[in-house]
Image (cartoon, rainbow, N blue to C red; front, side, top):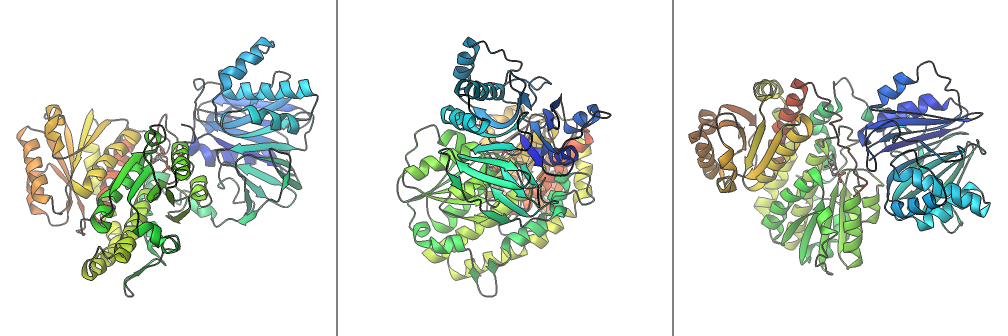
Length: 611
Ligand code: G6P
């Protein structure tokens, strides 16, 4: 969370920084700001989205060849002009942007206050900046040396970028725990939280590692560790096209990403699943097959939507591989001293690969001897690097804050891994194995079919858009989809929504049911079908409104429900890949009907790099 971008080179910095901020806005949009270094240091910042900053700068002199910008997701201090980044040091010479949290900032602030420093914001960032200034003055050293000393005292996570009035031809950056990519151009450099602001200028990038400092001039990139030793930058080629991060004719990224799913799932299966040969080829799985098949237990660790993918995977792995599975919120797992031993396999599931809680959870599990397998979308991200092995989901950049295509790609990868382990372990017979390979193979086309019902779902969304609450119910493989449907509705439409196992509903939520409560049943044809039909009747008997996700041709539920959302029939094990599609579309259309910013829902950020 928080997006940072910077440029140094012969071009005008401001347009590059501004465009970069717009691309990174998914990371936070409480406020934004830019610092430009020309003859002097100019800082402009504004509460609200990047467009508001842009409007406020019309007519200003923005000429500079060095500049940086920040789009904020507030942690310390409310969203406001004064808490917006960049911050300026007390002597006015340094400007800094920061993504992360300085955990010991209170102590540092007290020390600085005693020395007479005054603060103009509530942020931890301003504290760190003045701490750096103080070291610089006290030690009579340059900014680079002062930063190195400061970072040795800092507890927390950061990417910081510094501009120095006295050194206009240099940008200094440092990273620990939050992402930083440097684009290497001809006589110019670009810095950003991810590659999206960079790709139209250069495809050569360096991913900065934790505890590294970058000293960047237009034509020079020097990487050092905190011990002041020079490191050789590892330049990688970006495998990303500009079109992948643009809306491509859709009104919103969320809608584009929902409709991309036939292609993204296909990409995810491509080269891995071979129905004719009866094989699944995944290098990370194959190389570690011993570890995976002999696992004592599997723990799925994740947050948000990725946690829901972990829940589906629990059902799949237990069914196919006969290995006990637990699913953990990374934020709980990391703090509660869990029992983790050698022989445990931890699956870290993450779209961004940068979720702070997930990173720390797997680092701890790793220390205790567990084997870490990453299921990650962003190539080269922190979780991909911390994991012992992994499989990328290949969903392409996901920009809409609410996760859609990354989720279905996670499911596809996890199901393939489970099938591979089950086959190697001998816990699945040939017929079922071949059947499930075929079922997975058919999923992209079936998702396309499910998407053809978009207009119908839009009509349903308009009918229920004014509801105060929604209840989502499902059983078995579809229970996690009920949770995911409720999460999507909350995120995108700001309507309170609760997901529950359909049978458990009788132990509480049924008290909420009346004629005004829409109850969404995720009720595709599976081994629980008769049971869920009884649950639907229980709701109807209490005058609740029933919206049901059903398999094509399900006359029974069609006759009972107020509204139906149809998906093609599929084996229950792969059905979540289909039943989630109407859930995504429903929340999208309710959000649109309520005139909300579906790509940037309030208070949320896509990549949660703070605890
Ligand atoms: C945030 C996003 C969610 C996402 C979650 C986990 O809350 O808004 O869409 O599911 O983080 O992120 P990850 O990148 O680890 O999957």
